[in-house]
Length: 149
Image (cartoon, rainbow, N blue to C red):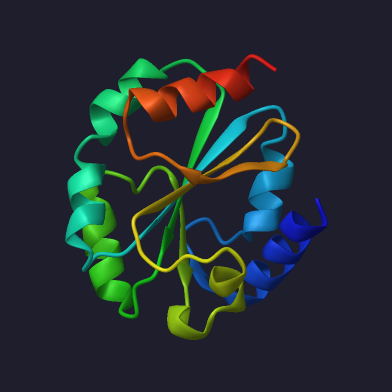
């Protein structure tokens, strides 16, 4: 829990622009009782964008369930980030932009050496999977496990 608190505290100070104007800590607090899926990505990341194309069918399989999608971008150019969000159809989800991702201590603490990267936070606000699989049946299984608790 201490590791998650430090993660949230440091991340809050590194958020340059939030589509929601909220910090990750606020998002976690507001969504207690729901499972939160965090997707670290960037507009320039081809594997990230490829995975995002699986989102519509992935979300359909979890439709009606208490799952919140949070997209954290490593972009350095806000315009490219906004355009990519629109292209990938994630503008209605929670979107955060990290400034200076190369120097972000929160990323070092979780050893995010490459993207895409996925994390799952359970209904109690606890980080339960720091290395979740991509959009697949395996990830649905992980999410369903924490929805059932």
